[in-house]
Image (cartoon, rainbow, N blue to C red; front, side, top):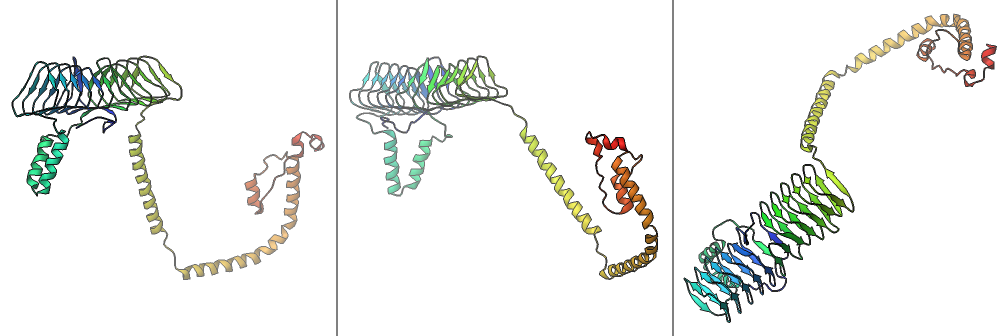
Length: 398
């Protein structure tokens, strides 16, 4: 599988559980390195595929297959658990040990010799993925579906699919720094050595990085992650989640720090700086749901009570009662007409007295508006004292 050009590797992806031990990069899954890269560390993984013109500074150990593309150089030994594929002009300064078959190209240099337990074929090997695709397509063409299923199961190794280590083209990886021109993603539970330089960086949870993080865009530090260095970005946003520890300085365009994060250095932000604190929104939402249910239940009970109590009386009874009330009102009106005429003079005199007392505003125990309304049956308006505004002439005359 030729890895020249941009290819499918568009970011530095470090899977969960990756560790750097001494001078080796140890991965549980596969390792895929793009062309024209420099890896000064040794590589240990399940299947290892090295692109064109890649330099590896230490041993390569592959539990499964190992492929070295043209013009690769390995400064150490190559140990392969299954099959090995070496392209043209590959150089190995150490020894090549292969447990399975060996396909080897022209002008390959192995300084300390090689050993293979299977077939040894000297040719330009067909890329592994192309070979498997050809075999699988031929099996499906002749109708051998069972054999195709067995081949697919063999390619999967019967294990769970694990994320590979992806190194983009023209990357530089060493014990001092990891430099790529693409975004970088670090999984969980990793232990890395070296400063990480990328376009953008996203670090997962429970990691420990012995170095600093620097990017042009956003940088995210997951919870329970320890960064033994600075975190810097030119114009992006730095996010430090709860439980994370940064033992150096943090410099960013915008800064977001969650409650529980620890930063021992200084904080610098050209733009906004946010401190996020968790307030237990889940509990509030739960309480709100219970309150809404209770209110709905109360409304339903109230409607039921109103329906039960609000029994409408018969219309015949209502009409009879209304007729009796009208007749009583007419009789009372006739009886009270004489008393009203007799009391007109008295009420008129009382009204004049009340108007004079309201004008002066000096009536002791003067009735309130409600009392006046009750006595006359009309709305009473009390005028303000003319002398209240500072004109004392009326008050003196009174």
